[in-house]
Image (cartoon, rainbow, N blue to C red; front, side):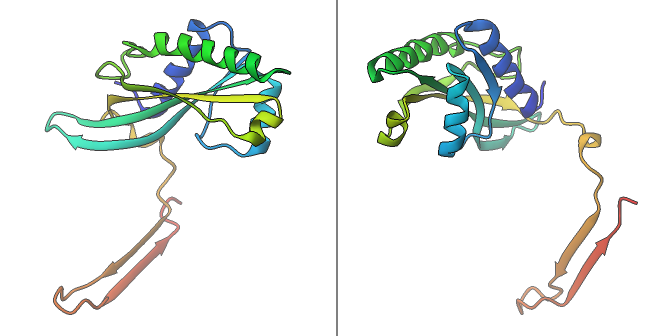
Length: 181
């Protein structure tokens, strides 16, 4: 089993090795500003791998399983809107073939589902000579295997206590700092 961060890295590695047409492949937080899009366009064609969300976290009594929402953004650029759009569509198709049926080094429990490609067109992006597409999918992953020692030290604790549940009044508060030292 792998962590969510390792799963995202595995997807990025699969894109780097599986679709050689990209000049730049990286992980990304998932939302873009226009300045970021321009920066990635300089490196185009680019693929940006993002975890877009986590749904349906279920305790199966054996494992904690989450439905991950993954996305790969494709950024292309060019003088002709037809050319940059054609390049983006070709890359999206190659990514769909790569993702379909891929468990990304066993970081996922099932095959990708709900594959979808979307043109994230806007006049502002088009005027900058950029095309932006996204391939998204869901995939179940175990999230139980996690080493708590990887977390930063627990430094602050704050709690409010309602000692009489019928009165809806906070009766006491605790605030402790410097726990990690």
